Image (cartoon, rainbow, N blue to C red; front, side, top):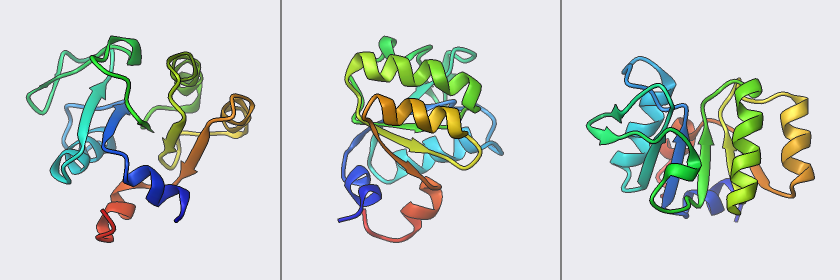
Length: 129
């Protein structure tokens, strides 16, 4: 089983960078995961609600620790998220295109977290879930 399939089998996700704007990937990813039966938490300090659901300002604010984090923020913002995720014991990071750079990848590898660099929307199109 590939690492991406292993992550897709986990059912509790957080979308960091979730958005209220339906044309943004932060919204599309959140909605797609929800529509596929995942328990998914929107994380974005700029919103109180996404798609009618409570939006959390940080990973630490979530009512439970997610199994996978889907990153939809720029690499500069992502660095703090990785630190917080490591502190919470989260091991799976899904990096959307454009959300990572060499520094962020190094940071993830130093923390011995597992990561996938791919688009969840594309991965969920195949009915492996």
